[in-house]
Image (tube, rainbow, N blue to C red):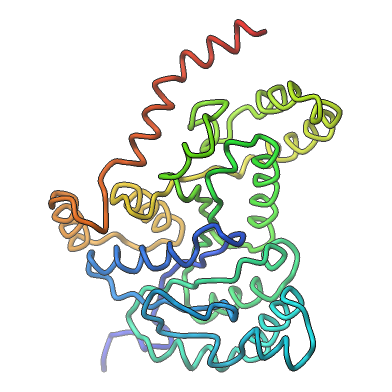
Length: 313
């Protein structure tokens, strides 16, 4: 009698990639698929977005075989938002189709490329229920919540991002990794008010409120911002990992964080493949250390920034 677990009882690991439109979810899935492929993992990308028409990666399971946003909008006369909600509810009602498609891929690592509509992850239940069912099918998943890093350059938007991230973490109910994406483009949006660790570790946000109060428009909303910041800090759940999808060191950091979250073991063979890849010459697809360089520049100015804050007070 074989001691090997059956396909129905085998643990399968993966990532549920979520985030607002334009945060880089599909680009991340493509980059992570290639990165994991170099490490020796068999990766299957599951397109969960019925509005995704041109996929840049090989897709193992595609929701468009079941339902598409265009068909729903034309047939039911719904707008883009209502149509997308209907599509996810339709997928939830047809989970047997999803199960049959996933069973075609055995010992693989899964990347679920999800839609960008924020309400799907803050108060609508379809994605949450689908993830709960995946857990019953022995999937061990972590939510990877991508947020465009340029929001760090605008304190008001960053507070909004923190609220959205916290709401998503509480609603989706998965091990959660928040990621600041597009770090290679961060400096195009201007200099940050504080060092990068302030944003990734979500430190004392009262400094952010004080910084906002220097703007006459936001000064009158100081009490509201203080209360929002108080909620975020009371939960003490939100922090971020930085990501540049073309940077090997950055991708490694994100992968290790996600593996800790979903319990996937980083095997010896993968470690050897990673060391070989990191020691290889720089190619066209990946770069070394560019994200780290951005972080170091802000860390180097940390003491000066703190000193200026003290002088201002």
